Amino acid sequence: MLILTCPYCGQKSEETEFHSGGEAHLKRFGPGSTDEDFQEYLFVRENPKGVHFERWRHIYGCGKWFHAARCTTTLEIFGTYSAQTVKPPKELRDKISAKRPGWSWRTYP
Amino acid sequence: MSDEVSALGGVTRSEGIAKVTEMPLQGMVTVRGDLSDKVLKKAILAVTKLEVPVLAEINQVGEYALCWMSPDELLLFCPYASVEIILAKLNKSLLKTHSLVADISDARTIFCVSGSMARDVIAKLAPVDISPKAFQNGMFRRSRLAQVSAAFWMPADEVVHVICFRSHAQYVFTLLKVAAQKGSGLNVF
Ligand SMILES: [Zn+2]
Image (cartoon, rainbow over the protein chains, first blue to last red):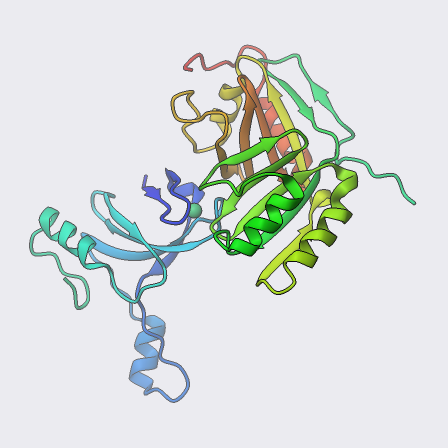
């Protein structure tokens, strides 16, 4: 079970108080984009064994969306951070690098 | 005019490990806006004589209380009969401030769970550490009770107040009643 801490209200709880919102930091390709970009935006997702970045919503709490970085094998949460960002914060990426040397996810670290 | 009634008519159950009672009608106003905004803070202070609570807390004095719901939402408790006046006052002072004020008195239900095992009842239903060390008077926690949203706070030792949607009142009362069954104490707190 995942133990998440909401960055907006500070509450720590297990995953049933939250709702998963899928992969984080997707860039939208809408009308006018190429078929390849649109297809990738709609259907292609990371499915890592290890470090992963996701969107979550504190659905039974303050209602806010936020981001979380976690390990898909150990269920360790590396950290949660604001939804108002397009990439994982450097501080968090450094923290992950210390714990999982050599990790990679899309274009990161 | 029609009679205002609470969802379950003030139902009470006291044969279990805690007493569960539906509270009488409570005036409730939702206030949304920037909680750090000076105008909003001043307007709230003027109608309730209370400061805006900090993160995940409740400020309660007498018939008024302010609950921290989210970074941009407060729940204001006031006497049921005062809601209209408070709405008018807030709307007037927040006229030029990006905000929303709404009467939700008839959209929520409050239960009181009391007794030395009141914490046990909540612990069975919510994914929350409600041990005396982690949860005390003054804190306000939004979470879930089994499958529905709820929030709770402890206005006194051995007393938990639970707020839920009015449409969930029967479900939540049944939950609390079952969780408070005779002989079902957890004896962990
Ligand atoms: Zn939250």
